[in-house]
Image (tube, rainbow, N blue to C red; front, side, top):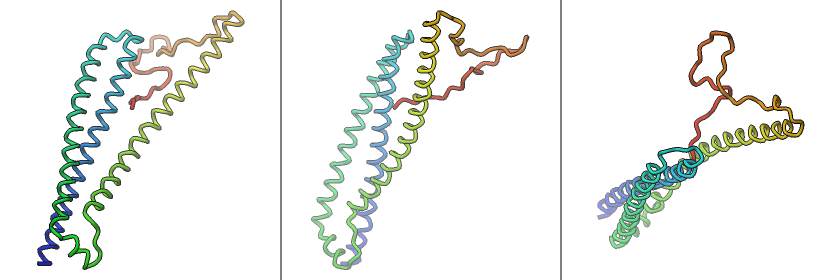
Length: 194
């Protein structure tokens, strides 16, 4: 009987681990939908300033993302209920008491939560790295804007338009040199909004 209880414990532990993996995958998808919805909000807000004709398309994409996010939330809720039911069923078997008596017992629910927290921590570290890159890009753009504002203010005070720097556009260095697409005066980084 003890051998069967140990076998049951092994299978139940693996089942809980698999449920934990599914929960993490669904939570990651939910986080991705949230990020993409924020991205769509940004695109919608900027569409008027940039005269972007795709504002309606962005709004439709946002609605679609919100619908998918709601579906993922329902699937997550179903998984949470499945975990609760599995734990209740496991307690009714009496396996826990028999295996605890042998010593070295770690409840499968604790193991599952440890695995979930470890994966959440990993996802958070990746998101933090992306956020740091975005912040450095925004700080650089803000510094450039402040510098340009100062120079423009000085030019305005002394009424000397030649102090105003030229717009950052690709320039020909030599006469007859070919224009190279993408060769901007200042390098630009891709920005992912989250």
